[in-house]
Structures are given as structure tokens and as C-alpha cells.
Image 1: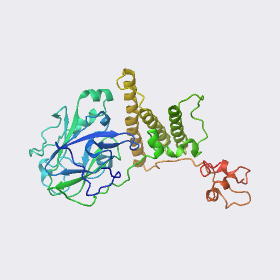
Image 2: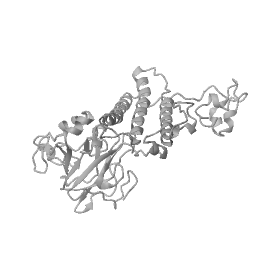
Image 3: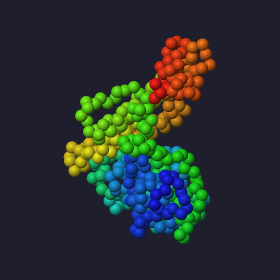
Image 4: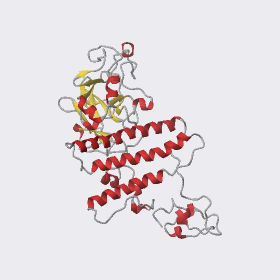
Length: 391
């Protein structure tokens, strides 16, 4: 059964399999960063999971798509990314005395079937600060081939706090904005019907055009949009339909980068301008790598192709991580997230009518884009953003 991303209907029960396993994968095309999916939950990205108190669940992250996406669990969305409480041995939201001996509910991390933490085991009532995350997460930064060869990765979680009645969240410890809701159940019924705490943001959904390319965020930058002049891709006339379609996807990606790298030079700090330019540059690299993977023309059994596949996944995961770090820098410094140069001239207006500027042009497209201004330029030239695709 498929539900809209982010919905949490009470009738929807995405439980683990008969062995209390959730098998985790990562769909890189579901959003800019990609979203988690679970074999037990069908094809729904970021599904709402149901977990019964007192049952030990195992989250298998052995699928290769999990590389660079170690699972975490928190009381609020995004955990450490938002500096909010995670499920840890010394953290409780219910006032439990478990904080005194570090026995609060927390995940336990495993590699190749062996627990990589210390003394902590809340099921056995053993307290301790080390629940294995500090050994587990760093290995997800290994080179992809080395991580795959290292073995199997799993997380076990048992909910033992009978006083806590809110929802929980799974999230990625490396990439931000990847939290999914967990509904706590007890005796076969959901503990809390409402979704609380709030997620705080909407899930990304690729446009139909992006879905056809394997990209995210380029649907408004196609050749037909008129946003860019191009050409970014030159053809010779003997291309197959598939090659032409790939070229059109590349055009949209390159136009997205070209347009969004037109930024205002910061007078505060050169790193701000660097980031404003580098984020769309990285987004282009990520989209190109996704689109290449989506062609399904690389053979993982071929040694050379396998190396290219590793490189493409590296571009996607590493550069998305870098994008989040750059976004965090801007946010932490109080800088604007973007600083796009407007293609609309603030000085342009229709000849002899100073009140008829680019905003006036926008009210009657495309006709007014041909109007000449006081300086003899047309609105097409001086209101480039407003008239994009209309000239």
C-alpha cells in the first residue's frame, strides 16, 4: 500500500517483518539528497514506521545504497543536525531515572553481527555511555568499495520507556533533512494518534521532468523554458532518441547551474560568495551523477564500470554532504541562503511612463515583453527574469 510521502494515517501500519527486521535502502532519486525506503513498506519514501514497546527491532543497512547514510534515532527531527535530543543512554523525555545510570532507550550498533558499543544494553538493564555510534558512523565515510567489502551493518532498537508517549524519528547522521516519523505502539495500538512533535518541513517531490532524468530541481530549466540561451549541448544529428533525451536533461542541469550561479558579490566575506556560487555548482555535479546512473548503462560486474559507479555515488553523497555544510555555514553566520542577481533592471521602464516597470510587464505576458523602454531596450532585454520563455 502506498501513501503520500510524509503522511501518517493511523490505519497505515508499516511494521517490520516476522523477524522484526526493517531492511533499509536509499533511493537517490526521491529528493535532492535521496530518501530512505524500507523493503517492508513498499515503494514509499520516508514511510511512517510502527514500533511496539518492548520488541527488539533490527534495522539492516547492508544494502550498498546505505553508504554515507548511517541511521540515527531522535526525539525530534534531524537529531544533532538541529541540536535536539537523540535517543541516547543518558537522555530521557519522560523524567525517567534511567538518566542516572545511563540505561535510557537508545539504539545499539552492530557490524558483522558483533556489537561495537561498550557496556550499554538497556534490554539487559546494563548502563553505559557507549552504544556503538562512535564506531559505526565513521565507517560510513570509508570509500564506497571499502565500505561494501567491510561487511554488514545493523542497528538494533528496543523501546523501553513506558512513560514516553510522543512520536520518535529516524534520520541520517550525515545528511540533514532526512527524518522519518516513528509511531510508538503498545499492546497492539498506537500510543499517540496525532503527529507530534511536528516534522517542521515538507518532503521534496521530484517533478515529472526530473523523474524522467533522474535529477532534482531542474524541471523549470528545460530548453523550452527560455531561462537560458545555451547551447550547453551540441548535437551532430545522428543521435538516438535515448541520447537526445539525455542531452536535453543535461541542458536543463547546465541551465540550472548557469542561472543560479549568477550571484551578488558579498561585501561581508568572500566565503559567502564562494558558497553562493558553489552550491549550484555542486547541485549540478550531483544531478549529472544521478542522471548518469539512471541511464542504467554501466555494468557493475565490469571492473572499469564498477569504478565509475563508485565515483558517481561518491559525487552524489559527498557533495550533498558538502552542500549541507555550506548551508549550515550561511545559516550560522546569519547570511542569506541565496543571493541571485536579478535579470530585471531596476532602472528600466516604458518610454514616457516611469511607473510601468518590469512588474508592470509581468502582468501581461508575453505581449508586454516587446515593449520598448526609455533607453530603447525592450522588456525582453531589460526584464530578462520576468520575460524568460516569453521572447
